[in-house]
Each structure stands twice: as structure tokens, then as C-alpha cells.
Image 1 (cartoon, rainbow, N blue to C red):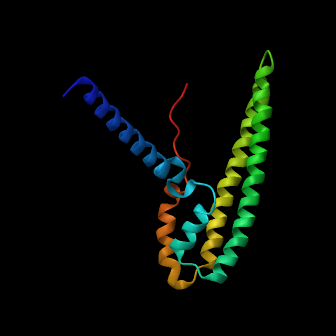
Image 2 (cartoon, rainbow, N blue to C red):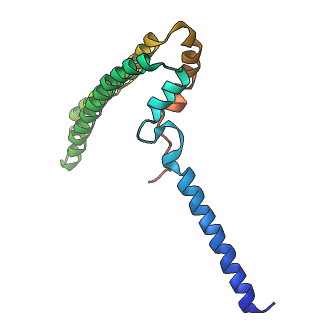
Image 3 (cartoon, helix red, strand yellow):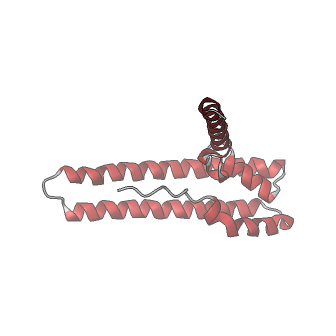
Length: 156
């Protein structure tokens, strides 16, 4: 076998491998994993896991609207407070009391977020029928893994 033929085969094999890898990444990339991808992910997952009927889904929509509005508002307050905190870095001497105070405000907002999540799932429990409670209990054991943020690679 001459060098040209060998090189041609190697290029074709590498091209096939690259195409396969790209296809895999597109079909199974990070935006496709779990319920964290945008759109109907968590909603669809909960509806399916709890086997919610049409009436329950309508009630669930109302719960989602309240939950999302509350979380968005708290996220915005956290962002504004973090901006004020990091503006402290522009000062020659950082005011330790202001820094501590702003961090405590952020912690308070984060606490409210966790309370909002908890209430949201309590409210979901209230719309479940007795025969769905087993599904609800199964869902609650998975909540921390289903809705946790994916880990990011460590950077300095």
C-alpha cells in the first residue's frame, strides 16, 4: 500500500470520527441533559412524574407563575446587592461593615429563595390526589439532584 492511499484512508477515518463526535455532542450536549435545559423541562418532568391530569396541570401553571415571578424578583435583588457589594472593591479601603452587611442581605435573599422553592413543592403536594402521593414522594427524594445547578469546571 503506498503512502497516498494510506494517507487517504487516515483522512477518511478521521473525518468519520470527527463527524460522529460532533453528532454526539449536538444530540447529547450539555443543553440536553436533565431538566435544566430551558423550555418546558422541569414542568414537563413534574407533570410526567406525578401523572397530573388537565385540571391539575392548570393549577400547576398558576403555581409556576407565582414561583417563577417570586424567584425572578429575588434573583434580581441578589444581583443588585452583589453589584453594590463589588462596588466596594473600587474604594481604597473596603468598609468591612458595609461588606458584611451586604453579604448578610444576599444570604437573606438566598434563604427566601429556598423557602419559596419549598413552598412551591408544598403547593404541588396539595394539588396531588391520594393515588398520586407515591409519585410525589418519589419526586421529593430526587429534588436536590433534579433541580441542582450543573457543576462548572474549576477556574482560577
